[in-house]
Image 1 (cartoon, rainbow, N blue to C red):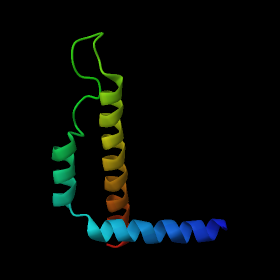
Image 2 (image 1 turned 30 degrees about the vertical axis):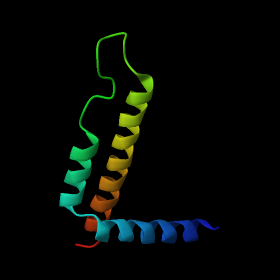
Image 3 (image 1 turned 90 degrees about the vertical axis):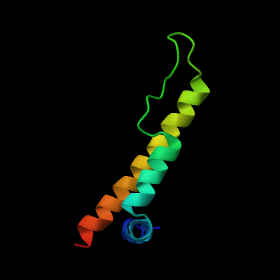
Image 4 (image 1 turned 120 degrees about the horizontal axis):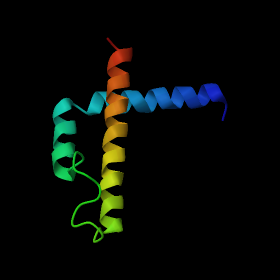
Length: 77
């Protein structure tokens, strides 16, 4: 796949996400998955690393979706 083909695919995917996800959907995702919470929770030294990894993954997906939506809106003003 050429660089131009990759760029076109990324632009198509960004448009799909940008059209489908509203601010309300992002708010529901943020609330449902607690993306604004600290990854490590609990008493110092008693953290559950798998739980922290799960919360970090939720946050990463949320931030990626939000970035795609913002980019789509900038490109389509």
